[in-house]
Length: 399
Image 1: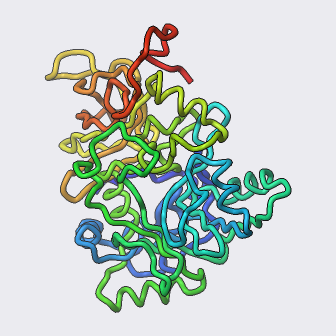
Image 2: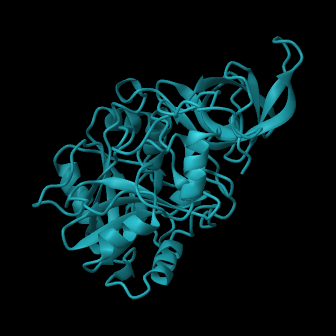
Image 3: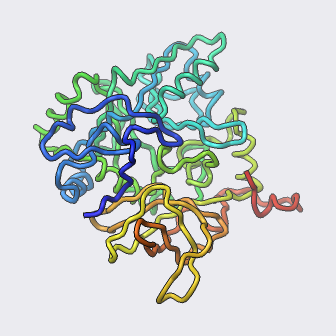
């Protein structure tokens, strides 16, 4: 069966918004385990039956080794107000065991880091794919504040569970994925929360001591949960249209393009780096690109790799030929019900009903679009224009 994601030549090479994986999971020694690649190097892609693994995960009874993820711990009495002041999220009064997520943006508003956030009452835990760079940046930004930053990836590992619940005081530190519920202060470009394809996806990450990873997984297996690989987790994530920094983000990404203002950006908090771009695109402009779900033609047994060019189509429908490049694939998956699918980032100007083709080794594969961020590029709460605006701002913002 063709691989549904890219087998990177160097399995430990960093992605544009990821870092080399530092640990190889002992669970890769399981019989039938096939190693992941790219940002999922170090853990299993699957354990021999990816279709059955997906079904178990979607039924709500499975455990996923996510120990490739990084963990940054921020302690000290100033931690929440400080993180609030330098990131995209409102964290000043974040209650213990309440999950959210943040972005660190460049001065131009491009995504540099993304992290799941949960505070245990003593420290704030950041789950990220860039722990070394994020910890280093935070350390540079602490000045005279009472905060202590630690890259805790070597001590803590994450386990994924299809559970829609925050951690309790009796559980380890647990981050519940807030996607796709629009958070207070956020907004959406895509579907309403209750109609969103990700509304039924339950997902949380539980932090366990790295030297107890195998024992913690075995305890869940003893309760009837099979161990499944990232093939299953990524297929479910793609179906839910959930952005991932190590896949969907490149050096040009602004959060609007991925509908990430739903959960990772508070529009009404104080200033932070990149806030001007966030506000300008939301209020006056339109994101230059948009994420889209592609339904790939699987009849020819061709699947693209992440990074493959997406083209519009020239010629008639019976013999489509690739035209100009209009975007690129970010994640490819083979879903047990949807078949081969992909997330891609394309130019906003591409019509939402335009047929597309994607480059593959050995040819191209036809792709049908499913809209995520609308082609008009306007959020549901964009303020009404009060009068003429500068030419271009009412139609498009180039970044």
